[in-house]
Image 1 (cartoon, rainbow, N blue to C red):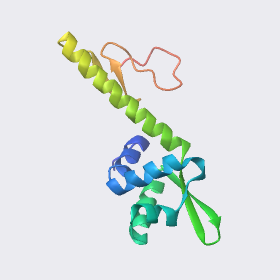
Image 2: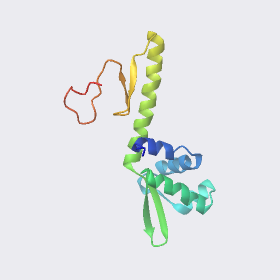
Image 3: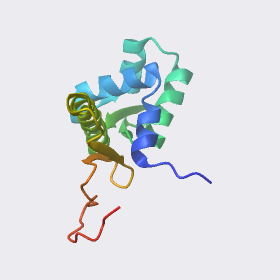
Image 4: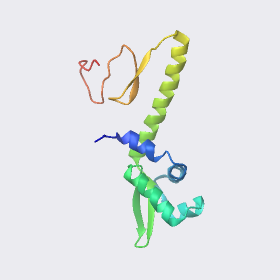
Length: 138
């Protein structure tokens, strides 16, 4: 059985144009979120299609479902989702910077660390979140 990290699951969920569009709208809407009908009207998606994509985003932990009243649901992004996306984007920026450094120096200077899902200098040890010792040499 393969274990998928929360970051990979979240990015996979955003790997579809409709889900990415939904997520963008919900981020713009802020903490209030949007009603399902507003999402459907704005994106022109059939209710069943919208429900499918919202379910995928909920399963990935990117959005939560709220209830405005007994017949009206809303969805909003989670703080965790915004942080996951921020970290992923920062990781991509770090990789681009690493590529620039690699080209400038003529050799590899960084490595990707699967333990903390980040980029480190080749000779630096990974220090996972909360670590206080230097015995994490990899």
